[in-house]
Image 1 (cartoon, helix red, strand yellow):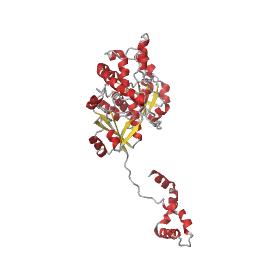
Image 2 (spheres, one colour):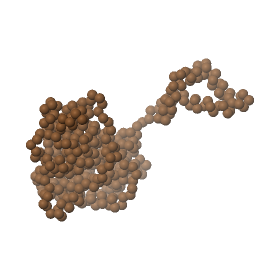
Image 3 (cartoon, one colour):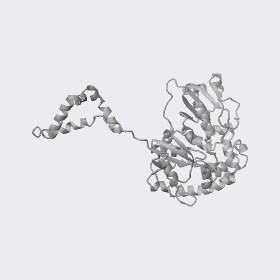
Image 4 (cartoon, helix red, strand yellow):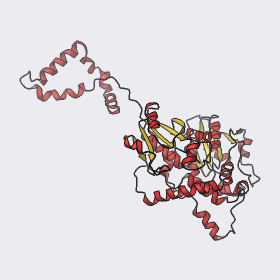
Amino acid sequence: MMMGLLAFESHQGLWNSGYYSQMFGIGGVVITVAILMLSTGYFGGIGAPFAPYFWPYLGHVPKKREHKRPVRVYMDGCFDLMHYGHANALRQAKLLGDQLVVGVVSDEEIVANKGPPVLSMEERLTLVSGLKWVDEVIPNAPYEITEEFMNTLFNKYSIDYIIHGDDPCLLPDGTDAYALAKKVGRYKQIKRTEGVSSTDIVGRILLTFKHKDADTYFNVAVDEKAGAKQNDEVKSHLSHFLPTSRRIMQFSNGQAPSPGARVVYIDGAFDLFHAGHVEILRSARQLGDFLLVGIHDDQSIRDSRGYRPIMHLHERTLSVLACRYVDEVIIGAPWEVSKDMITTFNISLVVHGTVTEGNSTGEIDPYAVPKSMGIFKTITSPKSITSVSVATRIVDNHEAYKKRNVKKKASEDRYYTQKKFVSGD
């Protein structure tokens, strides 16, 4: 359809010049009869060689445009402890269709198939809805694609294809959760994003904060004098994600603010990206035309707050870029907002939420300059959830999550042992 439309538009000048207008009315009848005579050899056989020169032009007579229904694809998941791997999976799924519908598995189904979820259904819905590639969300989706639910997807939601990653999704009895979709030929596969998983993040938290008082451990720097074995154990559970410029480009909007746009700036750690982050970014975006987000580097967070983030800088960058309310980020933004920075990015307003993480060890106000310029605003944080409170849920129920992780880690180890190269990402 697009090729035909482009071809038609490329000859628009001929239409406008009046060349083809003669094809209609009395003149059109005369030319049509002449072409028929030539094509049938009426003039002593001379017509056949010349007729093909006329037929291509007749093909450019405009036809009635057909309305093509958008291709709708479906992908589901628990989306617990939302991370850039989830976001990249949904980004890939969106590329396989025009509209992406996402099913968020219910709390009950997660408990039955994987173990207790960390985030509530409301929090997970906020996170999924906040992704730039998601068009529609179905809450309380089943973990298994049953025949009944598959028919609901096809008939009620007009789904064309069901999407999942190349890693196996098995039910407690060992069967494939997507077997039916594959059987009817309505299944498509995407490439799993390596280097991160909810299981991995839970492991990082449990390993780093072994004691029950998460707030205390979040505000204590890593002991430089701790035994080598202990430090090596912590390092072994750090991220294995290998960031590339291509991945950042895939997540980026790739657009600069338009002339005269009101640029709003907000900064932070954005660790363990959660529903509170989504809501504060939404509030900030509503105050202007372009939202610029500053993401502090790992060392700055450790120096200023006394603890290192669970997710490293590039992981946090991708999580923020995936949010639909974010237009651009500064990777490794300075802790203090300077006059030069305000001028460089043409910032109109600097905002900060009422909910903060930890206590800064420095005495310098990082927002002193924008305050002196009259362009600083404190906005009410819509949610009280923080990275600390999320980690606390895991630490307080560490036995349950340790059990869950042992089971999931065994499954992930099998995947990495048996995995093969899958093209596309």
